[in-house]
Image (tube, rainbow, N blue to C red; front, side, top):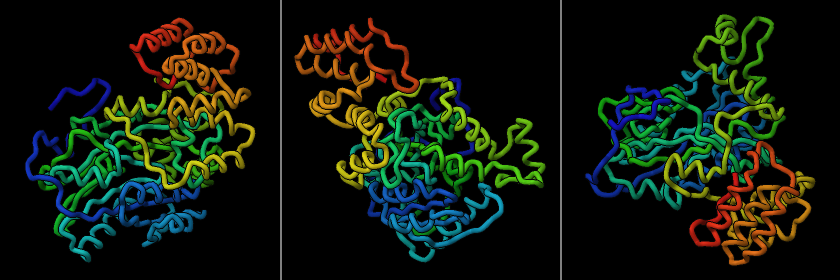
Length: 429
């Protein structure tokens, strides 16, 4: 086993090994399904389902935990098959995993497929392949000996406005991210989840536990050295985020909450680490985040940089809608911030020439990071004088939320390196 970074704790009960050499050729024909267990996710569930289809999933099965909103309706609208509603006063991982795996076991037995891949994820998780294309494409190219795929979490934050618009991929709005702060990993490849499993000959012989992080099997399973990038969007629009979290953690007159009974909540409130306590932490973190009081141990940066760091890939996500529909939706929902958002969006997702056209068009919506990036683009395109003039004027523009302190010397050095063809433009956050 390779040596893990000191900050991580390896949970050694997951029987998985990295496949170091090819053994059985590429994957034989397979089906590809996903299962969601949901509660109170109407803002994001339709996009979650459509993202799974965009990644090559054939069927998305939905088990709902008695959502008090339109979660089921919007999931079905997105194409999911609502197979069951499990009503419970409280939410536990036992209820979730028990329901999901009972469904999986039943469908495997009914269909008896020779090979089927199953992706287990939450509504706020948007997994992507480490390669170009879809997750299905990625699976098809793996060695047939591989039966499990791990994943790296990437935590996104709503530091731009609008924070999120339903029906679209959340990464269109949450450009900045950090590696997820989960310190427990479940294999020597530092994967924090193993939620993509292949079952053969209709047999349910692998059981996943603890939020799909780890699994149990009678035999050691092989996984690829790379893995999924799991984009995590815990915080969306402020109103819905707090409605859901408050409904989850609020304690009633008997001292109980959806997380547990009175005795359980006493442990949570006394800061004793217990199962599910991260939801209370998430509520506290959300309050600081939306009040602009959160202090990050590691400043959020462009999510592509995080992907490159955790998985050595620059892969984008797969859209299921056109860009014009997205731009029109933002204009209608948030006209006061639409053009500032558009500049950030273009900086993240358009080529340099397209960004410069937009930058020169929306003078009144510019921020410091837009000007810094524009200077880099001018330099790369050979417009050196314009690059330096733009760089000298950047302090005239407002600073974005949580923008690091501007370093004029470093910015100038970077521009000179681009002019000398020693560097390339990169998003300045």
